[in-house]
Length: 323
Ligand SMILES: *[C@@H]1O[C@H](CO)[C@@H](O)[C@H](O)[C@H]1NC(C)=O
Image 1 (tube, helix red, strand yellow):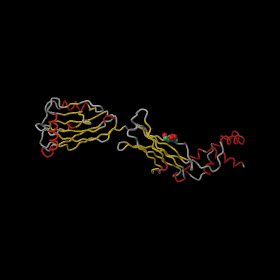
Image 2 (cartoon, rainbow, N blue to C red):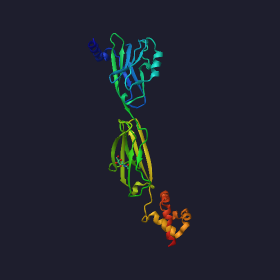
Image 3 (cartoon, rainbow, N blue to C red):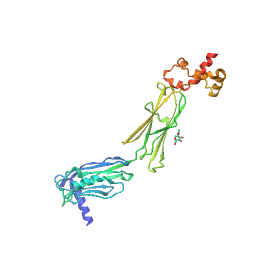
Image 4 (tube, helix red, strand yellow):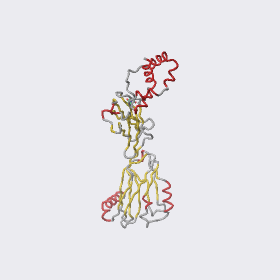
């Protein structure tokens, strides 16, 4: 009996288009969805004069939702792991469509299913199957795959950044994405241009502690700082993260050029000791005097970095003035 029906159905499927014209015109199923999110599945069909018997939804060949307008309860739902049909839609359907409704084959609400609380198990092949009335029950279908992604919960982080950098220093930093599935793609940019491949190491992928099915991505940027990296005293590094086509984020850091040492650096303790010997308690007051800075400064843009090494410069100037 089963075998006969299957053969019959297959023959009808083969000849469906020519003989009866019933067809699925468009199956709207997103190819990418987000864990904990929702999707709307829409099955558009054309009966070409036939009557609608049923619309059935399957995931990986297992039926989870059925609409049979001639049934007393036209909507049926079959529990399936990872497939949660939005309940209020079922209720709306049920209350609007108690009893036979065979004349309303084009009712748009009968061909929409909303799935909520998506989980990794929600991923799979979704099929919409439309059948015409007896005696032939011509059945046609279309199917599409849904991938379910776990998106990062945060923007990427940059680890290993120092407070200041000078020309000829090595900048070595890691960009790390928070866990995701599939893994996040990372990209480094220096002054808004893709970093040369020789400056990049990785990516490394680290299994997330909280989610063994997810990964953190790490990408290292490492290069020697040159004059040309600093535009007006500033270097910009940017780490971009993405999971196409759903997610994109970035983190930007601006690095101020620290003053190149004009004189050999003198340890701070030595300077303090010397200054205390020569000026005693006056040092504090002198240090707050801003005037000497302007004379020694040839690059307006490095004013901020001068402020960082302000005390030593003041001391050097004072020492010069004394001798
Ligand atoms: C960057 O990540 C790599 C790989 O995990 C690690 O070996 C290295 O120590 C990290 N560097 C910094 C600056 O965190």
